[in-house]
Image (cartoon, rainbow, N blue to C red; front, side, top):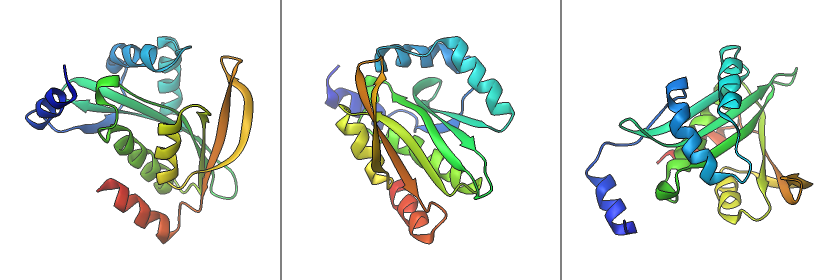
Length: 180
């Protein structure tokens, strides 16, 4: 299917919704996970993370069109006396849906959750070779803060990125612009 065909198909189908991840989504998530990562998480890891979500320490979301999962994302909350931080655990989009705004919508939803929880900052690791993902994160205000050598699969570096002051009016404005 060509890019134009996919765009036309999306134009006449249901809009994308961002919803809480449920166990019923894990089969489709695993299909995306296996394509997105050389060493994918297992289905059991997702089940464990959803259990952690019930304790309030995680949030996992899916982007869907109808019943089809287009992508997913997760964040871990780390509470401390300064309001806490959020750590993006993963974000992945089906290859046919990349560069269509799905990742941006998932990130906006994670950011809003971190802000509403009172987090003062959020962080993530991204492959040093993943320039598209780094650009996405920069749009959200993330800046490189360091390198984790051989973080992925023991042979690929990760860039550690941070975004501070997410409770500020300026950050609220940034999220509003990205949500549009």
